[in-house]
Amino acid sequence: MMENSSDDEQESMITKPLLDDHDGFSGKGGFRTMPFVLANEAFAQVASHGLQPDMILYLTREYHLNMATGSNIIFLWSAATNFVPLLGAIVADSFLGRFRTILFGCVISLLGMALLWLTAMIPQAKPPPCHESNKICSSATSFQLFLLCSCFGLTSIGFGGITSSSLAFGADQLQKAGGHNNGRALESYFSWKRHMELSTESSKLLCHHHRGPSICLPCEKLRFSNKACIIIDPEKDLTTDGKAADPWSLCTVNQVEALKSILRVIPLWSTGMIMSVTSSQGSFSVLQAKSLNRKFGPNFEMPAGSCSMFAIAGAVLWIPFYLQIILPVASRILGRPVHLSTRKRMGIGIALSFIGMIVAATVEVKRRSLAIREGYSDDSDAVVDMSLLWLLPQSFLIGAGVTANIVAQNEFYYSEFPRSMSSISSTLSLLGISAANLVSSFLMNAVDKLSKLGGKESWISTDINKGHYDYYYWVLAGLSVLNMIYFLICSKAYGPSKEDEKETTFHEEDN
Image (cartoon, rainbow, N blue to C red; front, side):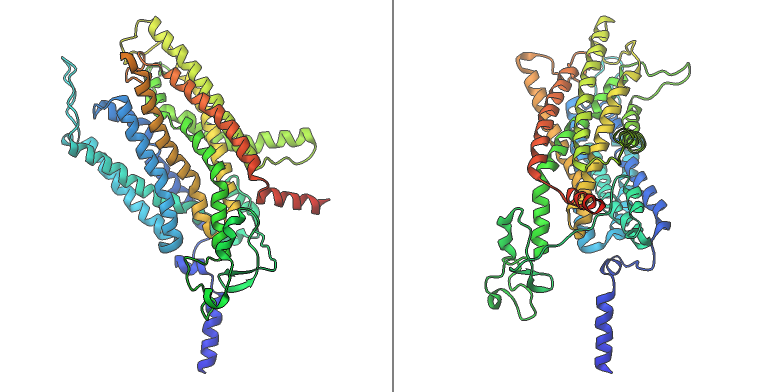
């Protein structure tokens, strides 16, 4: 009886799905959870990224910070917001599970939003208003700035908990509902993803993996790292149950392949990071919008911070435009189904972002010259006779470019990384945005200091009419050109991806 019981228990341990046991909700999930997953992610985006465009006005008006200082705070906040999901992904994959990580993020995010609301409601939480007579403004105290930054920190942690696991958690629910047998379900959920099967290779080399020594071979790419899983002396390198005697000196094949996946995508990942530098300049667009005519009809004036909706509209419209117009038209012209690879779409995103920066610089030249011609060179609060809709083209192009690139990045990482790294793959693009905000802060400070040499007015002056935001945009446009060249080099050096190999196999079988 004892032996039978032991055999039954061992069989149960083998057949029980590890992910369901880890998350602890094996009897739940499926399609019915998708509205809640998507709604929760949407509210998290509004609570975090939805605040950032307006925050520059809140910092300059209520906390009396200058443009450079306020932008630095927003850049650092955005960097933290996009970096924490990587930590959340590690916690979700290794410890808590995705559901509990999302739940923790919701609670912390709510706490951060509540404290931020209190800074607006409690007069003592921010500096007093400026004196109307002499325009003298009191600076914020250390405690007031600490309270403000604490709100930003809590919202970043909460956003990281939610975003790190929502994408992979939603994919898990579709797979529970039969997503493995219905590739279109996963593709619709990601809006861009195809569910790809990872292939394995074998040869006559003794290597270590999670079930002990076996005849297998890591891939030949980055082969210098293969020695980490090669068993030289089985008696010394392995224990009696086939495990590594020293896990720090002998890795499994899966661990080596996971490291290779990360190392190989870093150059392409960095191109997306550089592109995000040009798209993270929302604070400048808000100040531009404040100086433009925002009236639509006799009774409605659009808030300056709401101009960010133009970029959001471009981002939202890009996916159906690509799926419903670009691909069908191209397929009809060529007479065969057309599919753009992930790297081609990443390149399209970088190109759209570059065009957006050229348009932004051109529009700012027109706005500034008009403000000076109307006599507003010393009045940053004046509204020039120029419609807010002039910001529409640049916002659409940048929003569409970011979406095309980020969507393709996520699909690329998801297909190239092992299944065990799905949460990390879904947050890698956010890590790029985080790094981009740090680079943006450094670049803005450098431009600010260099342009002020000789006692000149800074290009990014708080007084938008005295500054030269157009020069700053041209610098970003030049950076975008260099990034496009760098992307082409990195894409060629990467070689064929798993997506390319699968497409080749598909066409060979079709022929």
